[in-house]
Length: 276
Image (cartoon, rainbow, N blue to C red; front, side):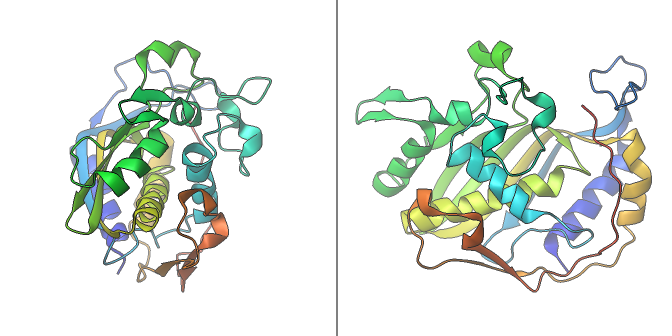
């Protein structure tokens, strides 16, 4: 069975059994009808995925991995903050009349900083260090820039990546301040697993572990019936993941560069409301 399925089921069962409700507090998120969107949560969940053994994608339900990859390319490759550069409409609710989400996500990736070796944005600095300083313990990125928060459509949820090379393997830690377990958990895991593969390929390394640290792992009140149904669903083996062997430049990857062979999943469609 898929390792991602097992981890997801373990996480949500733990949240439902031992989590804490926020119903005694006023909350920012709301449903489309204006009702407060309350959650049950656990503090600090840590999951480890060995990317060298299996790609961590759910089979309990279909993950729209092409849209997930499109978003990660939008942020890390295009370094865009405009929803018009994105194929899906997942960011539309946070965009202004010009389609921008402000100084968030891709914008921060494209800001150049001065180093003794020259000027780099965050992505190019990671690429430089993986190739020239692989033993460095300073290879990381950060999207949570306090001076720019007031100009962001949404404060970054997945905000930091720390890269670490052990031998010939590239490992990474994804830090996330907040996680909607139903709508975003495996979406984020999939896209950042792809990102580690991209950096590894571009740097001549093999993939190692992706460690996902979630500070506030929560399930929204209206999602609980779906979660309870999902964890009883049939689980399948993870698909075989592969990358186009002809692509070695980080900026040449496209959605079509990634293949998920024999991806089987529970094909029941769920109407999932998103809190905003």
